[in-house]
Amino acid sequence: MFKNYLVTAWKVLQRRKFFTFISLFGITITLTVLMILSTVLDNFLNPSGPSKNSDHLLFVDRIKVTSKDGNSNWTSQPGFRFLKDNVLKLKMPEKFSIFTVIEESASYLNGDKVTNHLRLTDSTYWEVLDFNFIEGHPFNKQELESGKKVAVINETTRRNFFGDANAVGKSIEINSQKYQVVGVVRDVSFMEIQAYSDIWLPYTTSSSTSYRSNLIDNWNAILYHSNSNMIKSMQAEYIAMLKNDFVTPDPEEFHKVEGGADTLLDIFAREFTSSYGYDSGAASLISILIGLTISFMLLPSINLINLNISRIMERSSEIGVRKAFGASTTQLVIQFVTENIIITAIGGILGLLLSGLILFQIEQSGLVPGADFRYSWHTFIYGSGLIFLFGLLSGAYPAFKMSKLHPVAALKGGSN
Amino acid sequence: MLNLNNIAKTYQTEKIETIALKNINLNINRGEFISIMGPSGCGKSTLLNIMGLLDEPSDGEVKVNGKSITSYHDKEMASLRNSKIGFIFQSFHLIQDLRVIDNVELPLLYRKISAKERRRLATAALERVGLKARTSHFPSQLSGGQQQRVAIARAIVGKPELLLADEPTGNLDSHMGNEIMQILESLHKDDKTTIVMVTHDDELAKRTERTIRVYDGQLIH
Ligand SMILES: Nc1ncnc2c1ncn2[C@@H]1O[C@H](COP(=O)(O)OP(=O)(O)OP(=O)(O)O)[C@@H](O)[C@H]1O
Ligand SMILES: [Mg+2]
Image (cartoon, rainbow over all chains, first blue to last red; front, side, top):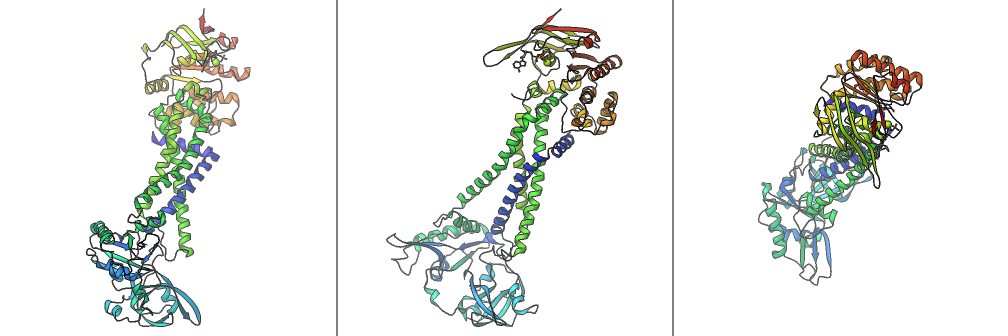
């Protein structure tokens, strides 16, 4: 029986080329946009590179500082001083790492100036993040403490400087200083904002030490625990520290600090909802995303429902005939829903292909350095779920309305 | 095989109540060929729709093979229509999106019959009405007479006991009308199908066994 529904649906859709085209167009575009957005978001929230163990990590990425009189506040990346005096004193994390955000560095290659992304880090950075070394090894605690001029570079930088040859042991000039390469890592996606860079140096090799006294600056911290269930308690400890034990170099100006030790979702939520207080806005972000997805899906669904309903008139004779020859209401509902599911499934497959193609193009274009936009299985399930919901949403109501038509009225033209 | 007892049908529209049928008592026996005649608007189609279980009477009782169907639900009515009744409409009512053969197979879709068997029965029905060569055409590619013959093939493909035809020749010229009438006569004679046909044509009515006259919603004798 179900095969009959499929065959009939297929025949009807083939004949209704215009209707099929319009419906497919709406569904394909909607799904393409949704799949692209969700894949990008998924890439950010579930990284596959060095931060793939992100459920063991918390990031101190933003702090909001308020002055004593309450008249001024700043939201910024934390400074070295804040991390040293406060974050590194937390009890729960098993490991800490502090490092800077990326900045541009200058090097000269055969007389031409080249710019690279540069990050200053400590040595535990290489323990809490899981880099893939293709040559050499990271710099260690001793090299950090002695301020040794060593560098880890990525594959692309090695190719630029040394061609196909090995790089370890060779020297590289960065910001007019010579560094010795100790390790080469695979390129990291730009989406992994704490891991991505071209060059990593021990922070102690910085030419100035003024960063040591800044409460707000361009630093970041990672808190690590081997048990991912401890993440919640670590977040609570961080907030308790901010509220009760915050140590400040300047109690007048830096009186109070708000913020949180964030998961990747929290980081995204803060930027998206501009929540820089103790609450990251993750809960509102999730409701916003669900709301946006639903309203975005609603557009083509309503379009499809409209097209379907306007076809009731057109197809009323068919409904009357089918009823006259023995179709029950249930059978008609199944038939119309099947038609719709087929059309949404085709639109869905087209959407999956199209979004895959676009993501591939973005990846190839180098717009997002090192990006790896493959569909992960949960994005795929998410997409298929959306497609099914879509088919049901836009098929069920018109189908119900169509099938309820009285056979005599349907044969006359379906006015009631 | 079909009994109508004291059937009435009224249509309630916003202000006025239209009495389409009243006091209808009618027995249709197995194997009869009956014509229904009467002026336009007298209730012929309404009567035929009630016989075909497409419409429910406002009052009275319909019995199929001695069983009252008053309490039947949608599913039971659908299965009864599917197994016992074949319909032919004045305006053909073929599904434009389906090919001739698929149109004819339609009643069989609601039975447990394999695709192969459906195809065989539909081809046989089309052969019966002389249209075997047109199976893969779409309805719009056929003449009116040919379309009505497809509609007849669809009505008889499930071998119904009762064939109901609402002005089957109304949209056709007399030559085509005659062809259709000949097919109905052969179904009656050779297949013993019970046929009820609404017509405005006295000549055609004379060729049936019994003529029922309707006037203003009532039977006249
Ligand atoms: N859905 C409806 N609502 C209101 N009145 C209706 C409806 N359907 C039919 N009628 C009325 O019922 C009466 C009988 O209609 P019916 O269609 O049975 O006539 P008929 O004898 O078949 O006419 P014709 O020869 O023109 O086909 C008419 O007066 C018609 O206006
Ligand atoms: Mg009529």
